[in-house]
Length: 307
Image (cartoon, rainbow, N blue to C red; front, side, top):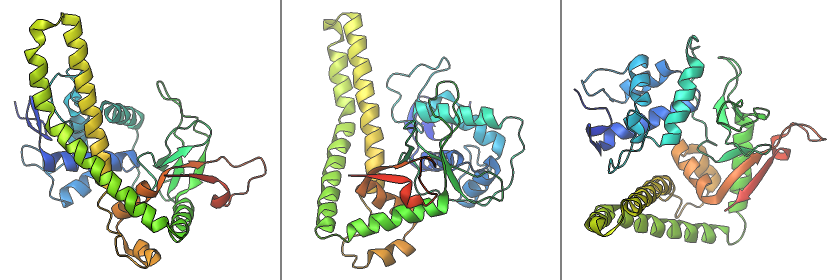
C-alpha cells in the first residue's frame, strides 16, 4: 500500500515539504476557499500526490480526512510514538465538519483571499470563538464571521464584520501603537524572548527520543497504569511543544529590524509577514456585535488585547 502523503511511511515520520503543502491547503480550506481552488494552488506550487499525480478535490478530501493526518488509528485513538503530525486532531475534526457541510453542495467559484486575522488572531466577543473567513455570496466582499453553532462547537454565529475594513482598522491601530515612544524597543525585546523560547522548545522536541527511552527503561519498575499515565503525559507534552514551536516559527523571523518606515513596509510586505507582526504585537482582537448604540465603524467594534 502506498504511503500517505505527508509522511515518510505508514508508521509516521514527517515529510517536511509534503506536510507544508497539506497544512497550507488546510488553511485555505478553513478560509472558505473551494477545494478545486485549493487543488489549483497546490498543483501550481508543484505539490503532487505520492503517486506523482496532480491533486484533485476528491483526493485532497480523502487524504486530509485520513486519521493518520492527526496521528490517529482507525478507531480515532492516538498512536503511541507516531511522531509529529500534519494536522492536529482538532484541525482534522474541523476539516471533517467542513467537508460534511459541503457535501452535496456545488462549490461556487470565488476569488482567493488570504485572510489576515485568522489562526486565532480574532475572536467573537459574544462567545469567544475564533472568527473565520467567509463570503455571503461568491461575488461578495471578504467577510469575517463567527461560525454557526454545531454539535461540539460553542460558537454563536451572530457576529460578522467586513474583512477589508476590519483588517485596515487593525493595521492602522497596530502601526500607530508601534510609533509610540519605546514601543519598537519593547517589540525587539519580545522578539528576542520568543526566539529564545523557540530554541528551548527545539531542544525539548529533539530530546523527546531520549525521554521516551528513559521511560521505557523504567517500564518494569512501574505498575501498568502508572506507565500508561506517564507515557500519555509525555506524548501530550511533546504534542504541545511541537504545536507551540510551529506557532513561534511563524512569528520570530518577521523582518522589521532596522525598518524606519513601518507604514511603507506594511504596504508591500507579504501577508505572512504582516500576520507575524500582528502575532508579535497583539494577543487577539475581539469583534463586538453591531447594536446597543454602536455604529458600523470597525474602529468602534474592535477591542485589541496587546501582548
